Structure formats: structure tokens, C-alpha cells
Image (cartoon, rainbow, N blue to C red; front, side):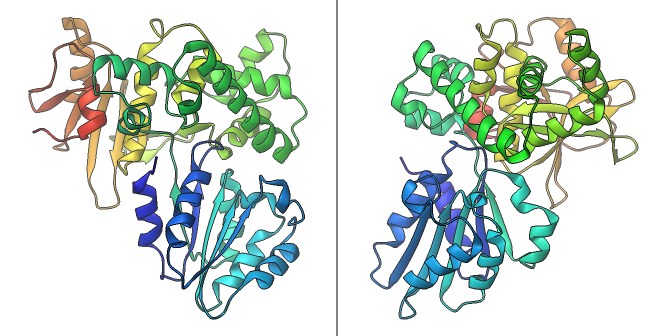
Length: 401
């Protein structure tokens, strides 16, 4: 199954003297996208492809930038257009020195993947002169989920997406509870070991696992390092707030979870404390907390809405207006802004007042939305606030037609 959106984005930045970097959580589909791109350009005889997959044993010898230089030099063909494709490049020491050098070569395009955001640190940006384009690869959207599993767009299919999430590898295992959960748990521990524990030389692995489960159980809630440290202490652990901050950053660097800042709508500034955390894949989040979704459906819906807002190109923060919280304040570089409230079912006046009332308290003219799974809802509005069904939002965005 081809994820054409990402192939198109790669092709968009070819020929612009840029290093193209696919980033995202391990096992989210970056490798397949890179191979699909490789197979497409291989159809042209004037293209020479240099492909390195650091998860394959045949490339174990490529460990440093010197090894990388030697391998590329050996396979470079100056009579053709050369494409250097490297999967999981963060496993090559000082790789940035190599890609910076080959970026200067004529007729060389570089497309790489990585599973840790540290590879885009300020030091790397400085070393390669900022001449790169990051393409962030997410787990499957709802529409991709339907396509991958040959499902029709229905409430039943949406329930499966809410339950199992969007790891592409589920296609091999199917959507049976036991098999899916085993696979998701295996992926979680693979990411935790390779991209968090080993990369950051973490010793207190037991605390790290407890921390991830704490975040999973508190998805969509404001979390502070102090509150986590106090909770862990009550459970018999002994960690400092600074340790919690470092561990949370390591989890975010591996793309397992995403930290979302709070935004003061009135003061137009970012708060420096207390963040919300959402999982890259809600299926992994569900596997960690166990059970069914009846008790935490609102958390999962909020996680899914957050991920899709990012997919639509928004920068997302949590809104704060005095004592009122707005689930999402979404903006784009063009100046576009929208406000979004997430809910399960708006079935009574109290819920309606909470979800719509919070948005009504914002005194500006930017579009405002409530997204829920309220039965029989397609799209309606109240005092200019649009109420969308989750399934419609996931397939049509903010289209009101």
C-alpha cells in the first residue's frame, strides 16, 4: 500500500539542494515509504541508487561517517543522477559530516530517515547549514486505516480505529484483540529499548516504564514534573523533578509521545510549566493501559483529534483563558487560527454548556469547533460554533459541505 502523500512531499523537495529527512516513531512506516520511493526512481535508467538500511546486518560495517563516505564513494556513478537513501541514519556516528559533504556534490540527492528528534538538534542544523527539509511521518490516518484493512467508512470501522490505532504493521496481524496487543506491546518495547534506554543510557528502566504508563493513563491531562515525582514517590519510587523532565524529553525525542504547551489566549504567550502529552499511536497507548475504551474514551478521542490536527498542518497548543481551558488552539504560519473542543457525546445541557460555553468565552472571530461522536450528527452550528462528528472530521477535515 503506497502512502502517496509522503512520496509526493519527497518529490516536491528534490532538486532544491536540500537534505530530505523522514522523521517519526520507529515502525511507523518510514522504511516502507523510503523503499517505495526507491522503487519508483529505480524505474528510470539514468538514476543510480545508493541504498543503506541500518536495520539490515549487511550494513553493520557502516558505523561511522568515514565508513559512510567510503561506501557512498564506492557506489557513486558520476554519469547518472545519484540518490543516496539511508534508513535509520542516527545509528551512524557523526553521519551529519558525511551528508553535508555529499550535499555539495553535483547530481546527488539525499533522503534519509531517523527515529530520534535529536538528529535535528541545533548542532546538526548548524553543521549542515540548515539546508534540510523534515517530513514528519505519522501513524495511519483514519482514511489510510480504512484502506489498509479494506474497511468501509462506518461507525464500526471508526470504533476499530479508536481501539487499535494506526500502526501499519497491524495489516500482517489483523484486528483481533490478542494479536494486535501483542504486536503493539512488542513495538513499544523495541522503541523504548533502542531509541530511549540505549540512546540515553538510562539505568532506571523500571521508573521509565512506570512513567510511560502514568502518561498513558493521564493522556490529555495537564502534567507537571513535580506532580509526577510526587506520584512516583507515593508508589515507593524516589526520583527528582529534573529526572522526570529528562525522561519525558527522551520519550518525546523518540516520538512515542508528544508534549503540547499551554497557550494563554488573553496574554498571547506560552506557559512554561505544565504540559499535556499525547501518544503518536493511540493503539500503543491503549495497549499500555489495557482493558476496553469505555472508561477513557474521551482521552482517546482527544488523542486522535490532536494527531489529525497535526496531520492537517496545524501547530497545536492547549488554550488557557483565565479558568477556562480550550482543548486545542491551532494555528498555521499563514496566520490562520481555529479553536477546537473534543468531546465524546454532547447529549445533555450540562455537557453542551461546558463544551460550547468554553468556546463562547473567547472574544475573537476565529473559527470555533466542537468535535464529538454524538449519534446522528453530521454538522450543525450554535452561535457560530460548528459541531462536527469525529468521523466527518477525520475524512473531510473542517469542510462544512
